[in-house]
Length: 178
Image (tube, rainbow, N blue to C red):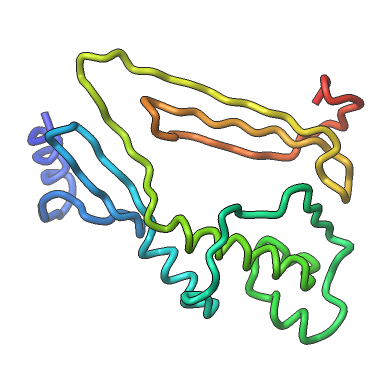
């Protein structure tokens, strides 16, 4: 079947078969055919980001963000130095401040600590596929407009296949409604 797909694509496009992919979009692909597993790891990309922000030798962090930390647009930069430091950080680019930069640095420290972990997909062909979905909604999560947050993650045989965290478009009046 795979050979048929390759042949078809070869007729439609100029292509060269280079064998099994080792990387795709900066993600390292690990294979263990005896156990029918594929692992995906972004350690090279994380190292590139750490180097870009001069954090390749920073302390390691065990959690990505402090519990109950609330970031707001109103906490924006108050000096030109703060603004310059934050101008390349997309998350807080609307109105960045030192607290935003500290938060991003903590996330980078966490990524440094977990950069060699990877998502694993596959498993026993005799076992049925197991699909799990976890959801959560947070009431009044955004300190700027008090909108709630909805989150979900889908897991297939232990490997995450889809996830999302988004602000709700409506204004919930209770945690049950959120």
